[in-house]
Structures are given as C-alpha cells and as structure tokens.
Image (cartoon, rainbow, N blue to C red; front, side, top):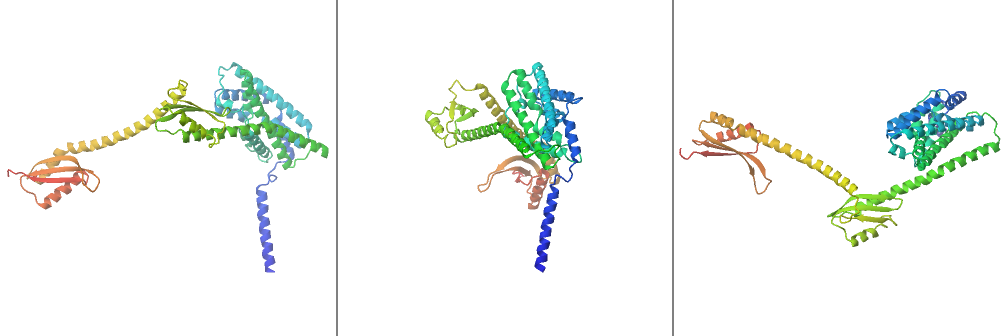
Amino acid sequence: MTHQSDDHDSTSASTSRLKRARNRFSLLADKAEDEEIERRIRDGLELSGATPWILIFAIFIASVGLNINSTAVVIGAMLISPLMGPIMGVGLGVAVYDFKLVKRALFNLGMATLISLVVSTLYFSISPLDNAQSELLSRVSPTVWDVLIALFGGLAGIIGVTRKEKSNVIPGVAIATALMPPVCTAGFGIATEQWSFVGGALYLYTINCVFISLATIIGIRILRLKPHSFADEKVERRVKMSLLIIAIVTAIPSAYLGAKLVNEEVFKSNVNKFITQEFTFKDTQVASSKIDSKTRTIELALVGLPLSQATLQNIERRLAVAQLEGTKIIVHQTNDNKVDVTALKSGLLSDLYLNGQEALLQKDQQVKQLQQELKIKNALFANSNDIFAELRAQYPSVTSIFLGQGVDLPADVNQKQMLQLSVRTSEPLSSEDKVRIENWFKVRTKTDTVLLNFVVNQDN
C-alpha cells in the first residue's frame, strides 16, 4: 500500500512539472482574440493615406545610408518601413484561406516594391556618390543563412503581433530581416546599370518576403485561428504543395551560394595557414598576399633574399597535404618587376609604423627611468655640502668627505650599485661612532646599499 502511494505521488509530481513547463512555453496563454489579431495585420497591410509617404521617406533615408555607408542611418530607415505589413498579410490570408486578402496583400506588396524601386533609382541617379560601399555589397550575395534569418524573424514577428499586450518585436524583425536595404540596392543597380546588383538584391528581398510569409502561416496555424472558408482536402493539399514548392525554389539558390561561401572561406583559411607554415625564412619575408578563391590562385610578394626554384617547387608539392590540390602559387621576389608596389609599400609602412611605435614606447620608458636615476643622483650630490656640515657638527674631527657612487662586483653574487662615503678625520673614531655614522648615512640617503670608509690624516 505504501509503495502504491509513493508511486502515485511520484507520478503526480512529474505530471505537475510537465504541466508547468508546458504552461511556461505556451503560445496560447496570452494570445489576443482572433478578431484583434486579424485587425492588426489587416491594418498594417494597407498602402494608402500616410503609409506611402512614410515608405517614400524611409526609402530615401535607407538610400542615403547605403550611399554614405552608414549602418545607423540604414537601421533608422528599417525601423519606420511599412513593408512588413503586406508580407504578413499574405501569410494570414493563406493560413485562414482568405484568398481575397492574399490578392490585396500581394497587390499592396507589389505597389510598395515598385515605389521603393522607383524612389531608390531616382536617388542613386542624381547622387554624386556612385561607389558601392560595404553596406551595398552585403546585400547582393544572399545565402542560406538569410533564409534562416527571415524564417525565424518571421516567427518572432507573428508571435509578437498575436499577443494581448503590444510588443516591440516588429521593429526588431524589420532590422534583422532587412527588408528595405535590398530594394534600395536594386535601385542602385538600376541607376548604375550593374545588373548583378539588381539580381542579387531582389533575390534577397524575395527570400525575406517568402519566408516571413511562410513563418506567418506556420504561426497562424499553430495559434489555431479560424479559417474564413471551408477548404476541402484537395484545396488544402494544393495550398500545402504550392507553399512547399515556392519555399524550395526560393531556398535552393541560397543553399548553393551558402555552400560556395563556406568553401571560399575554408579555402582562404587553409591558404593563410599554408603561407604561415611554409614561408617562414630567416632572410625572406612575405610582404603581401592575394588570394583568389575562384581561380584557386595564391599570389605572393616576397622581400629579402630570393628563394631558389627548388625551394619553391618543394613548397608547391606540399599544397596537397594542406588540402589545396589544384591551387597555383605565383611568387614575385625582389628581383621581379611584377611586385605589387602599392601593397608592398602599404605593408612595409604599416610594419614600420607599428615597430616604430613600439620602439618609441620602449625608449620613452628608458628615458623616464634614466631621468629618475639622474634626479636621485643630482639630489644626492646637491646635498653633499649639507651632509658634510651635518657630519662635522656631530664630529668636529671630520676634516673632509668623499661622496660617490660605484658598483660592487663580488665573485659569487650579482653586482649591485652602492653609495660610497669616505670620511677623513684628524683623529681616529671609535667603533660606536663609525656604526652611528653609517646608520645616519643610510637614513640620510634612504638606501641600505652604502659603503663607508674612514681615513685618519697622516700628518696628525
């Protein structure tokens, strides 16, 4: 009976813990009413009144930020961008089988995209700055990581929208997924006729739109919002299949680009390790290096004594061991006119500057130390008259003193600097007086490393 009671208590405790854990992670506990959720999303997808003007101004801000390479300005533009609304509207419409809502959301999204492209193209057409900065370049090569960011960002967004209390999740999702910068980058590509920018940026924008919508659909289904119309199994299966195909078609190129990026980074890492390990010579240094992962080429500029062909051939044979099969090494040495002088000068000047800064710091510390030692010496010798006067006042037989500094060089220990005081008197001093003078001199000079010598004048 007791065993049965213990088992029952243990089961009840486990059930209670599981219930608490389920409640802690429940998305239904603080979910807003279905009507309120739909109202929020439907209000956000409309592109009328002030919303188009906010979009236009946000596009101008984002374009300026991309043009001057200012991350803070780009983030500010993303915070006020209204592009998230139509995207989530598409997801809501598909999730509740409201296909009129899907059409309206897609139309508004298309209009917002068109306005964004026109405004950004107009700006970049009249801007005097036409160089592609890092903020622009980072939006033209989407990878599978952008898919994950859009998916998880969209999930966070739909959870935030469906809470009873309004949260600040949506602005964060807008920043994380970066909806607006890709459209502006496409506008830059159109204005400068760099079509690779247009394709890459619009592909990133498509990834964000598709996977935020997909995340919205998943979130709405998990939260069990009521469908607006009855969907038989055939319609439901068709919707699911269409979503799957769209997701796969959108993600496949990004997976390829992601794998390509990983391979390039691995190649560069292996090359840098190879250069560090193989090109370590006493009289020859690597002044600059260029790594081209596309053509698998390593180009090096060396300074110092030229390496022999045999040495270079031995290094090339070790490429396979470093997982660099098929890689070509081009070496420019000091007697080669093909050395990249600009890179060489830049590297040398950088090394000289850093070495010079370090040397100056060491010299400055040495100077300070020497100045301190000189200050102590000068203070000692400046007070030599006072030392003689004080000593003569206590011992009138003192006729003169010799004050100096030297080095004690014993045979069994390290050398040490010492202060020397030689006292000349007209008559011999007692042992007690000599000890007293030595102690006084230590206190007077604030050091224990002293050497005293007492001399009696011979003429007395």
